[in-house]
Length: 107
Length: 348
Image (cartoon, rainbow over all chains, first blue to last red; front, side, top):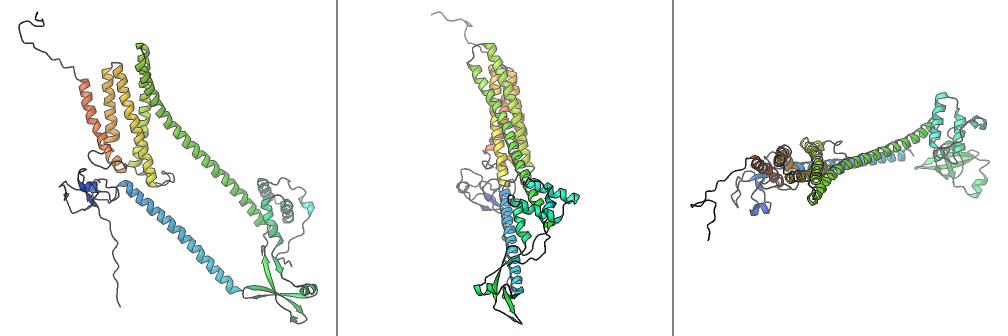
């Protein structure tokens, strides 16, 4: 029997950016992998940046700045809320269907 | 045809002679509670009371249907109606449908479809009382929630008023400074400037405290707490606090500069130097120290060296240099003039 290996979840890695405001990479908000140290365009030392707003981060511990981390949490909460609502509605619908089937069987 | 599932007692109108005539929900609730406590009211009299008040009260109207029990409707033809008085009846269930059959001797007749209408089971007195209580309590709860919303809006108004007072104090100082510049009388001018300095100092200190509380809110990540962010999203709560910080910083900056200008107009060099020193210490405490926090949460700051909060923090160095130059002794420059006749003009 064939066994399919489950694809691993894409983990977000911190990205680097060019801090030089005159550099084209900075203007275009180009992201670089964290393995790179210097900008290939202007030679400036690369810094960790937020993946959403290109703001400089103090270290590479997080992918997003604090503001966008909070925004991400908001989105997660909203999704959970909607999910809970859908689950409750589905549960109620299932219960209703069961009751309907039971009542039909009685008659 | 009507079929009663539960036999209800016969109502006696004399039992309800002491029943209140006021038909509001509050009176219904109090009447029921009282009856429950004292056990003076019988089931019949309470039922009778509800029926009596049903004409005007919506609450009681709901129970009348329940009191009357389940109601079945038969679709009868004219010939079936004629035999209704004499024939016995039998209910049959078939494929989810109820049918009625008349008995004629040992045989049953044709099936007549039956539709159920209204409630199949009548509510008893306790259920009715519970429903009355529930209705009245839910009304009370909605009243309480309405009043809470009113209180919350009042608090918002008060907080807005406080902030407006601080800003108004700044504007009063600004206008006094402007008026003092146009005044010719030196005594009045100095009085106006002193008043302006007082107003500006008040506004400045109050706004500083407000700004500090906003910074600590962000620093302690209070926006993660649902109660502290008051139902807003995290992003909205952060943006609100950042907006407060920006507003406060703008007015504080202007206040310190106006204060320094007022001291300069009064020819108080040392006080002016002190004012700049205070501003420097304010910047060191409230901008330079929490700089990473301010940069992280402010959307306008991109984190570069020339960014918004970095340039504001760099003001401390400028202010230090300014304070040092103000405190320093005036330099005396000796000019030596070449030639024999010192300080005399050469006659032509």
